[in-house]
Length: 249
Length: 386
Image: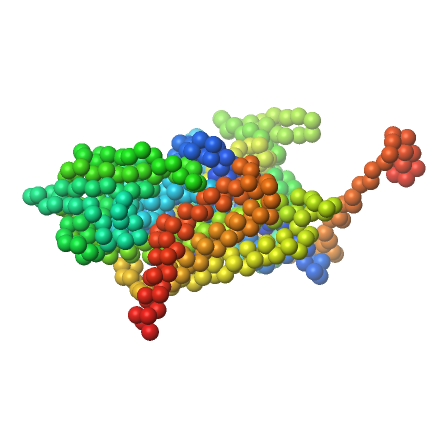
């Protein structure tokens, strides 16, 4: 069974993100980039499925600038078998990514597409769902446990107030939540081996996909600075302020 | 010899993550128990850290010196005991074999060094031969096709963990030309270890005496197969080691500065954070400027080191490596001192990391050649080449 796993190159989670002075976006020049942490979890799950003998081949896919090859290379070092980079300088949106992934899933004959539940840069949380809709496949999003047997994926989902378990008839789309697993370290010898694995380079048009943005960013701004609190002398003043100033009671 | 940039960046990110998630949280454990936990040693092996500097053809990663410097910088950012576990395999323990060994020696030893299966240790210093290494007294007498070794080696890093030693002994007359470098398996009869040394800092590192009594080693175990080359080998090994230590010193300075900045933002006196006082800022600024100067120097010299042929030593590069070692290790001493000062009384308390770093970095000015030996190397080369 072939697995497709999608990986996105994002600003590293340890970097303190700064808004550009012209408010068109965030500063990425000279900033450390790495794989979206939820995608690392997705890659780890794919590798575990291969180690269990469920999957036979893992293809790591990224859509974006040519430096995203490094992100794919990290997935290869973790255990993916080969990579595909769909290269574009356009800032791709979830719908465009979902269309590209649909085309690749069909081209590769993948049985499962695993993605992170969302990327930590734009927090859209949309690509997996859109992909499932476009493919007409069932989806198990926010997965915290995945079991595959007899053509069915049993996915435990993290939902508000608890867990929900769904059974999906394969092929299916799965998106990884934080608690699905703890991703391994790409060991140095495996990083060496990953150099010899291939990465196919494609353009969106090779797959017949138009990635032109549908959304326009009007302005990006820093979150408001949190103001310092005040001390009140007694409970009576607190209640008075909550009632008359904050108007919350 | 170098790893391509893309793979190197992934490797560096992996090492940074390992340090952040595994090593930094274990620092206090190492300090309290004077031991790096076995499971962390196993993870280091699995990760491939023992083979950083061993070429790919012998099962390692084959980093260039400038790449090794960047890794050493990261390793400097946590307790130095962690680096020490595999430090002799990456550096002084194995490099002599890589630089001057025969093909057979390289193929036999290096793959096991790279995997961490074999820990190598470097035995040069003796009770009466430290900075004056050329006067070492350990004798190696030829007896048939074996040498018989007698003597004592002192302060030998990783000796208790070692499976084999790169060991310097006198096969010929007095002076540097009488010294040969041997590969001595640790289980050779007649070789025994002294008591573990009790040190000022760097708890978790293992050093002790190595005592040789009629230790029979095959003549084929001389590195390169030719006697009398040992001192040259040792000096080349130390050139590289000095750059590694310089980079470690910069990484530790970086960590101490981070700890100090965090403390200066948190700690309040006279109604405000102490970081708002200019006398505190002055200490931070001096440390920052000195760190950047040192790190620029290390990056420059490691690049020069990579430009010269691997097996040759260049007096100009050696002189610069000594400058880096001298400046960076003295620099981190001053940075650690200011770090304690910024912390005030807290800096003298074991709970705060700067207290440990203050003791740990003191060793950097002593090993791989003391500051004074670096001064002699630099001064001598300046007059020679003028």
